[in-house]
Length: 192
Image (cartoon, rainbow, N blue to C red; front, side, top):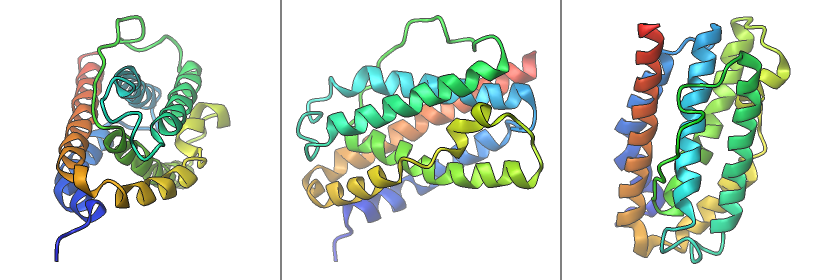
């Protein structure tokens, strides 16, 4: 039996997903520089994906949801920027030009919306470890409004089985972008 797109995404991106989680785990969210660096990395990735998303040839036909997903990713970006503002001066990439990162819209949505499910685990860990950041400062991590988009995305996968190879490959590229930003953030903290 041929695996579905969702099954392929889970199987073929699982290792990369773990590498990204491990890289971000090196950034201590209980420390000001760790949470700021994590937010900087997420802002950079979201900015690059937003800059490239609408130019993808399947943007308009991504099950009719390309713009809807882009707007949700924009909302998450803005929430991350608002959270980041609580930690002082902007990150290293804040004033630089944004290089678009163009991947299939469903790939970007899979990685970002899926990571939102993981953000609930992060938020719970912060509460359990009694990290006492202001509510607005951790709003990016505690936000739970993406759940409905995740359900929509799962439905969209069924209509995009013919694009499975490119969607899976682009999801891997999106995880690689997150990994590069996490590593960069960790290097900046170590060198400061």
